[in-house]
Image (cartoon, rainbow, N blue to C red; front, side, top):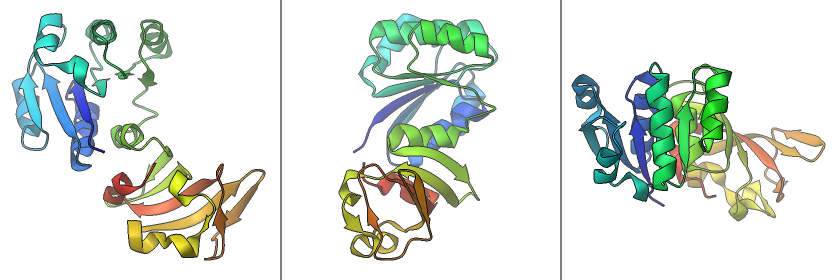
Length: 215
């Protein structure tokens, strides 16, 4: 299902999030006060706007309160980062992700209502994008620009079915490396392996295919 995201701050991290969300087929509004940053992504997202996101009226005019989620990717200006996060929550944005520079900064963001705190040294922009789009994604390791190893909660559509029945390689272009079950892990499972409700799957996939996985 197509979702709407606003990404505020188009540094390396914010640009990565915006591009990945857009490549997955979702609507992305990218906002930055620097013309060069806006120009860089304008052909890769739904809409790119040069604006001062610290101004509440500007945010209202962009209609951000109606978006599914907002990502505050501003890093260097901590004051602006906190102000924008607070404003978004007060406006009623459903889910706000904010980039933090330090643990103390993260605590402040948490106290003012940020739903998720991201520390750039621990979280790639692409990992966040897939986590926003596919709730089942628990972790992601990028092997190359095209392939990733991903840990996901078993989607409901996979429950009580064998790998042979699901034919995941043909339908989704993914390969199952292992299945984590309670207290056990099944390495290189065969076609007869059955997926349970609480299983965790470790898969290898083309990165672009992850957006097609069911929840």
